[in-house]
Image 1 (tube, rainbow, N blue to C red):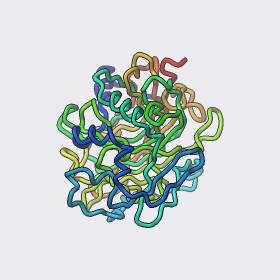
Image 2 (spheres, rainbow, N blue to C red; image 1 turned 120 degrees about the vertical axis):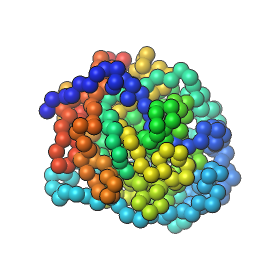
Image 3 (cartoon, rainbow, N blue to C red; image 1 turned 90 degrees about the horizontal axis):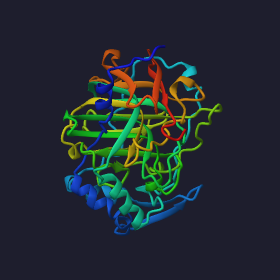
Image 4 (cartoon, one colour; image 1 turned 60 degrees about the horizontal axis):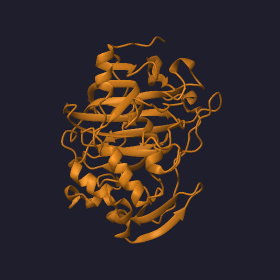
Amino acid sequence: MKEKIPIRMTILLLFLILAIGGKELTCLKQREDTSRALMNHQVNKTILVEGGDVYDCIGVNVQPAFNNPLLKDHKIQMEPSSIPLITYVESPSMHSMPQTQLPIIDCPIGTIPILRKNRMDNIAVKTIDVVISKDFQKEGAGIKYKDELYGTRAKINVYAPKVETDSKDISASSIQMNGGPNPGFRDGIGAGSFVYPSYSGDNFARFHVYWDDGLPTTICIDHDCPGFVQVSRSVGLGGRIKPISVYKGTQYVIDVLIFKDRKTKNWWVAYGEQNTPIGYWPSSIFQYMKDKCDFAFWGGYVQGPTASTNSPQLGSGHFASEGFGKASFIKNIQIVDKNNRLATPNVHRSFPGSTNSSKYTSSNYEVNNYGMHMYYGGPGDLV
């Protein structure tokens, strides 16, 4: 397998696009008061999970999403009308890769878990400052894709890259999709593994979903902005992903699927080999993604005030050329086509690469009947 190296400036421009959706003013108001927002709802049950995370179980119909005026009369969709169809016969070898796990919470029927995530008012405010800062830097390595699509699925290799605790930067491995006329006017959504110390208060790999409004000043994680409607009473968004991969040791993956419901037009997130639904972004919160997307990104990125000048690790912290067991990978990448079928992306519309090959690389890009596959990662400035 040989790496395709696109023109540097083209890749740099395309990789600096971060997928996004929602209303900026609404997001900022809600983000400032995340912890107090839950105080307005009756907590049905509080659960302490292994590792010290605390989840509050609140009514599914009073979750933060419904503070969004666009969802005033929204009817909750408790399960997707259909799941994208697989167009190939899966071989047993595809499932030999150990699956890591999301936190499993036992909330009562009719409620969903909301992570307290060590919420303190000063942490929330600091997070806002980082998110809306004009001093925004970003680097990445992976595959960008431009074509008509209605969802995507991939197996993400999970590590806990090093991010300096006081840097306010983030290192993420995820799948994401965008839609809109140009980088300044785009909706987008994504899901994956994040290390974000200034947000979570630690350096653990955690599972997050996110959406944004196309501007490089906002990012709405999990329930921080009113928009994502969770229906699962057992999946704990923002919780630790365990176990994680070990350099030269056992490799773990998480299978993530994002897709548009053909009947309701809502954008769903599911995880695992059984495509367990977590929740969805209602179509009404988007401007440009009500019907489909036109851009996707698979791989890793670092983002924040010092993400370019003092870059954290990406993936395993090792370059892509080191290969399996050492470099991070994303495999079995597929898209959902207009017929609601999972299909291999068009190779002619796929562009692997990185924004800065001295810090991060991608290699061993290949395509087969099971999708696309690629290694990526690097040490950043933490050599």
